[in-house]
Length: 448
Image (cartoon, rainbow, N blue to C red; front, side, top):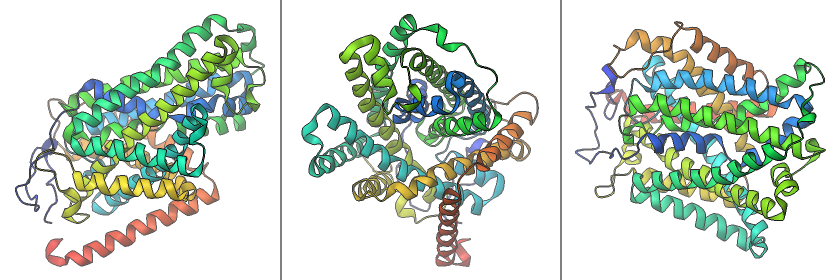
């Protein structure tokens, strides 16, 4: 198949790029930048409302659900760490599925990843506009909202078009910017907290714990972003496992501490619409509440910076794999970025964000995450059999126990999706199958 990367030992051989002798992507993302991608993917706008959602379900026992979700995220993330250590090409879960299970399932993974990221970025762009309007009320009009969304997406896209080092640098800065307000919140809150609120009333009911864990496991997702741009990561096989483990640990600890502070400082937490801001107001005053809103602005910007960096790389990977037209995989001769993919992906995000029609597509985000969690965890034992171990490959202990647990956890999540989510996810996968079959027929037998 023209354009298809030959699978092999550690993915070193890369013949068959039918796009001609085009320039290659440049490796400019280091360990810190890759870890920032993990943290930005996990810590988004949701943390500013999540404490109330979980408290409404579990009350004082809420930290237990966070701990379980953190363990589950680490189990799934470890499978990404081993799978990712075997490749240095772009694609992440798409690439692992391609090597382990073949072209069709790989395309479905990549297709669902694209749809999930498009919907997620559109929703986050609207959240960014809402938070910014809180700080600058004159931007609350429909025109102001459209201007803010457009400028934010175009600015981030322009940086990613100009070079991955610029996009990665912005992600790094915004990661620090979003963490500082949250760390201030946690550090000050732990001193002011009323620890008597944490007398557990007993073991929470399984049904409530399951529901809260499902909500949190979706919120703990996003670490998989770091696995996609491996072709632009310095020593990606070594750095990806480190970044995944470190990023998941940092994000999980931060999540748990934020929940603890909110519970200790905000009576009636379960019914509060802006729990982090209101809790900060209780012990840091109005300035503290404003700081949390500013943190939310930085958080939404940081998350979308990560999505607009990672999303085009999946489009690029599908083209490199011969599963979309080669046009999508072109690399800019000067900037060494997948510039066509950056423009197309960013334009789609902008159109979706301005249209306000992303709500239904948002269900694909959850379904997509479940799909590539199941596939990636299941791929680990297969990749062990099919690929020779490399010097930098990371291998999980205890045989296949961790990947199997990852599959079971992902299927457990899948059992909790709503009928609407299942329907929209199914339609998304059917549309992917239609695109796959159509492109294979268009290329003809000689291209297969």
